Length: 83
Image (cartoon, rainbow, N blue to C red; front, side, top):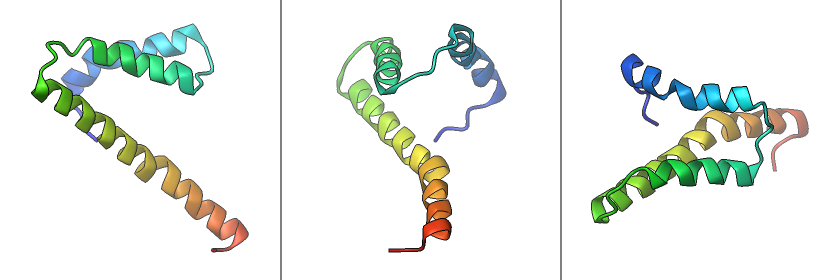
């Protein structure tokens, strides 16, 4: 997962602010829509751009698993025992 520098993060804070301002509880469909809209702005579509997008999506999935899913599973193992 790219831990972007402060300058880049400041440029992208509008995304987080907009989601907070709307005040919605996002579901999977909402998330997919937001991702699709962001991808739409990564033109021009050529092989390199499409490959970069697929890599970014895969990286985001792995980071979500590493930072969110795995710790949750570890907690549940402690609570309920291992398989």
